Every structure is written in C-alpha cells, then in structure tokens.
Image 1: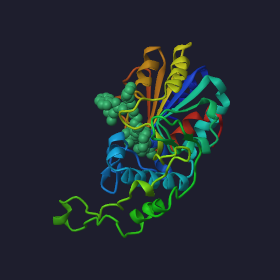
Image 2 (image 1 turned 180 degrees about the vertical axis):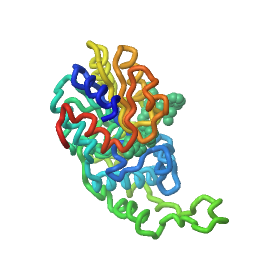
Image 3 (image 1 turned 60 degrees about the vertical axis):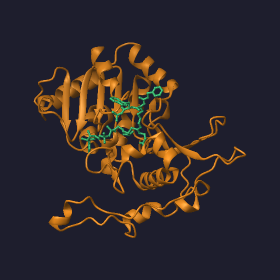
Length: 301
Ligand code: BV8
C-alpha cells in the first residue's frame, strides 16, 4: 500500500473532527456531468450560464428545461460507492463529522447519509420555491416528473435525436461548433406555478444560483463546526475548488492546523509527490479511491 495511504489512514484513525467537501466529481461515476471540463455542456449551453437568476429572468422556459433534464438524470442515477462510503463515515463519526456538498443531485441522501450532518449548501434539484418576493412557499423532496406537461419530454430530445446536436464527424466541419435546433420555447403558463399565490407566480428550482447568497443558517452551522475546537482533517472530493464560498473551507481548516486529503482525477504533481505539507492526493475516480481510503473506519463498501 503506498506510504501516503498508510500515513493518511493513520491520520484518519486518530482524527477527532473531520469535514468532507464534495463537488460534482463524486457523482461522475453515477453518470452525472461535472460543471467544468468537456461534460459541462447542455445543448451547447455552458451549464454555468444557465445557473443564474438572469438566465431564469430572460428565459424561464429554457432554464426549467435544463433543470428538468437534470432532475430526470439525477432520479435515474444511482448512488455510487463513494456516496455510500461518505454515508458510512457519517454514521461511524456521528456529530464529529460533517459533509458540505455543492451537489444538488440528492445522491448522498439516497446513499443513507444522515441529514443532520449533511449540508447541501447549493440547495437541491428536488426543492421548489416561489419567485414572488411576498410569498415564502417552498416545497421539499418533490421527485415528480414531469412537473408540468410541457416539461415531459424535454430531457429525452437530447438523447433520442429530434433536437440532438449533430456532432459533425468530418474534419473540415469539426471547426464549427455542433449545431442543434433551439430547445422548445415555453411560455410561463407552461411552467410550474406556485399553488399558494393567487396571481400564479412561477416556481423556480430550489438551488443557489451564481450571484445568490447561501443560506446563513447553514453557513453559521458550518462555521460553528469549524471554529469550535480543532478540525483535524478535511476530505476534498471531486471539486475543482472554483466556486466561492465553498472553496474557502479548505484553507480555513488548513489555517487551523487541519490536514487535507484530495480525491480527484486531476491533482497537481507536487501534491501527488507528497511535496505539499499536510496534504495527500489520491488520484482516480472518487467512487473507487474514497471507499479504499476510508476502509479502516468504515470496513468494505
Ligand atoms: C455568492 C447550484 C455572494 C446550481 C452552484 C470571481 C472570483 C471568485 C468568486 C466569484 C467571482 N465572481 C463571482 C463569484 C462568486 C461566485 C463564484 O464562486 N463564481 C465562480 C464561477 C468563480 N459564487 C457565488 O455566486 C455564490 N454566491 O458568492 O454570493 C452574495 C452575498 C450576498 C448577497 C448576494 C450574493 C453561489 C455559488 C453557488 C452556485 N451554484 N450550483 C446548480 O447546480 O445548478 S455551483 C455549481 O458548481 C455546482 O454546485 C457544482 O457542484 C459547483 C462547483 O463545481 P464543482 O463541484 O467543483 O464541479 P466542477 O465541474 O467545477 O469540478 C469537478 C471536479 O471533479 C474537477 O476537479 C474534476 O477534476 C473532478 N472529477 C471529475 N471526475 C471525477 C472527479 N473527481 C473524482 N472522481 C471523478 N470520477
């Protein structure tokens, strides 16, 4: 076993308080795309450009088709061994462990992660909330598909042709970006409506978009966990560390003397060579590397 793994596992067994920071990479082997890199596209749109309030204001039908596609994909996906490994660690460690996930796919809950120590800081695909400022209607755990008749087939057209992107295969056309017919134009009456508001306000996905603040309640709980006593170790799993404030937790744990273990398919060479102080890097698919690394505490997944 590589010395770094043995070293890490000794630290894991001695650690009292542990944090896991999770990103889209953990769900890749469940078949869900990451935000950056080649899979971060939906019908030629950059996923980041669709996860904003402006995108929803400009074309709520487009954004709802994107989220309808992601809901269906997440419902079809199954938790992988990486999700189960984290859920198992949470059960072993109890209140001395928290998982901060940027993912909205709900796979950690389906893997049995206790909700009490799971912080879905970017919300969930399965929460809906009213867009009317005066209305505070929020719905949790809505796994219904389709949410409206108009949204019933949008996710299929991407897979079954119809509006499938014509990925050009001959060299000279490859220069142009793949072409596709625009997605269906949906009007607001075709989209999910608030059941409480009289004037039929639109419902939106219960996720945190770029430019929106995160829940203060969640952030306070995370701050308390990190600030009260020493966090000995943070597991950084399948995240590019691009998004703030999620990416700030790694340095906060490091500044308090905690060690860092990175589980990613893409890790800087100096970390892999063990040249970064108190930092381990385990290169590979997190659904494989994580269960192996956590084995001394969780057994075999
Ligand atoms: C806020 C929900 C303030 C929606 C998401 C300029 C500089 C710095 C920051 C900013 C800036 N301009 C603006 C900001 C702030 C902004 C931000 O960080 N922007 C980024 C793009 C620079 N942040 C915000 O806006 C946040 N809010 O700051 O509010 C405020 C305060 C008061 C009042 C008003 C405002 C809100 C951010 C939340 C955005 N919502 N998701 C949805 O999901 O649809 S973030 C989105 O990105 C997803 O949650 C995703 O999970 C997340 C983070 O990305 P990753 O998870 O890391 O995924 P990524 O694709 O990047 O990387 C995948 C990784 O996995 C890679 O490293 C890859 O190598 C690895 N991998 C791949 N396969 C595997 C693997 N690893 C292991 N195994 C594998 N098999």
